[in-house]
Length: 234
Ligand code: NDP
Image (tube, rainbow, N blue to C red):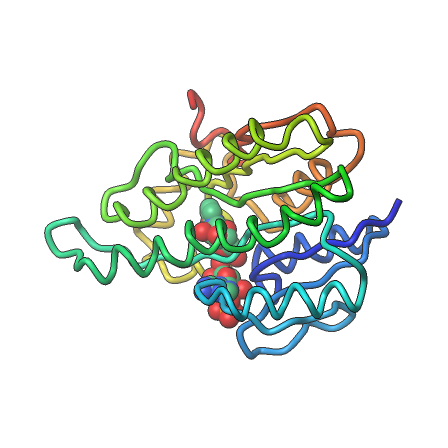
């Protein structure tokens, strides 16, 4: 059955692959963007997840277009890496505001309709870094680890209503975000990946498509690494 889906940051990168994967599976998919416009064939709503009013307005547009959001993929995220000694409080709070508080904002807004419908799927895009930590990534790792706490608390709050909340923890995926790294950083990452290759956005999209399905209804509060073995042991 086709569901009403919203993917934050679905205008490019992993979010776009997730959106396309869910659309191919027959769902009605909306994506947020911050001014780039909607990718071809997808319904776009402009919203910055650091702004509750923009989030609320985006949900209203999605509701009018395709009905209340049944599957929420909280994917929007940023990095701002530097060692703790040099990390300003603004750098810390800006990353947490986008990656973690942003997820709280969209999850809260989606939850009321899921409760009414007694069905829902939350998928939070975390990171291997949220579980293993990363030098120079105190802000990012904290925000991504926090998503596990959100998903597991939501599972306890809403799990009895056919609502699941799961976390996908990607490893190294080829997107604009990882293209910013140096060749040395990229080579060092590759050496740590048992699969012997970087991940593609579609690797994440395939996992999210399954978690959004009826078949995945008994998977709740899980953290799924999709990382070619990079983070084994979590
Ligand atoms: P990109 O940098 O390619 O894309 C980031 C997306 O998030 C863009 O759509 C961007 O919108 C959106 N975004 C950022 N901040 C906000 C905001 N405040 N409000 C709304 N949208 C926002 O990153 P990826 O596709 O690589 O990453 C997607 C997610 O996957 C992120 O959460 C990232 O942390 C996570 N991840 C990525 C990994 C990787 O190796 N690439 C590994 C592990 C996790 P805009 O186009 O307007 O900038």
